[in-house]
Length: 240
Image (cartoon, rainbow, N blue to C red; front, top):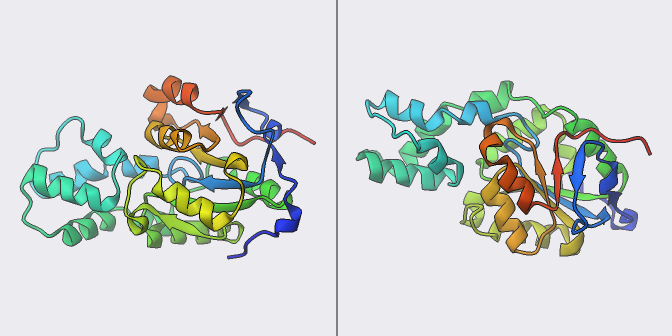
């Protein structure tokens, strides 16, 4: 992985996003981007949506109707603790984590695609000297397998995971760690996310935020749009 040169820090104009709603609160140019992975850079949400339910059904349990809402806000370890406590599972947290991951690892290694336009957007940001990293609730082996297979790992100077920093995205710890790594000014470091709770957390921590449309988050789209400094319907870029 290669970090981008600080000497090319003029930044990238948000106005280059052709299919975006940008508020006056958004910075005109960005020097750093902290990318979410699932639902933002890669189209992985269809694999995650039923993961908790499928795991419980395989264990002979009946999942609650709102289990997807719980999973969306948790790290993998938090999800395992939740399943163990709520459904009376006897396995250890580590065993439950492994059981969940077994249902999705192959998709990261072999199947999950980039969101449309993501590759061209990353190239444009890199060419503008923007520093980039990934901050994800997904475990490192899955995240790095997908980014490497898709040919975009070279754009990121780091991959930071919620489990490694010890907090989900209901807390700003992973964003603060990413900012410290990038070394860019907070006010010029964009957090790009698809979920309401993550946008709210980053916004409350003083980061400019760009929300990316994700079909699985459609019920919260208006709330997300109201919170974010920019709302991207796609990664399409306008000509210079």
